[in-house]
Image (tube, rainbow, N blue to C red; front, top):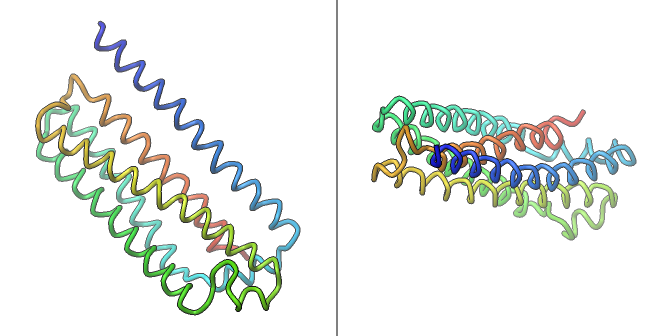
Length: 198
């Protein structure tokens, strides 16, 4: 009974933390919406500079990673330790591929002079500089959350491997899964806001 109360308390604490994350990104999305309503054409032109292929690929990668995290939780609850370990390793690999893609995407944009304060953007319409400023802040912040999520998944993997996470004691993995799903959900909002503006 005490273990169940402890796990319930941990889950409640994680939901409260996730609520603060929702507020943070929600505020950025509202800011984006306000500026988009003021400068729709400039934001559309800015979005055309982004590579839709990278956006679609990263969306698929994160959806697969969410499935793998959910599969790992189910596997732990069914005492299928090896499946849980494989699923967590797969989710970590997805996170790494996401970051590598983002590195190349950002690198290409910076190489061609598309970054806040660059001569190319300063010589163009000010709202496009604003669009890319928001793009780098929001996707950069999301990338930091991906890194944090990967650390949490790696810790979970070690704990599953050492049998400290079991079907009777899976609160840590459950909470890491909740965090990872939120990070993936945030990307589902980022993707259309920046890549699918029409």
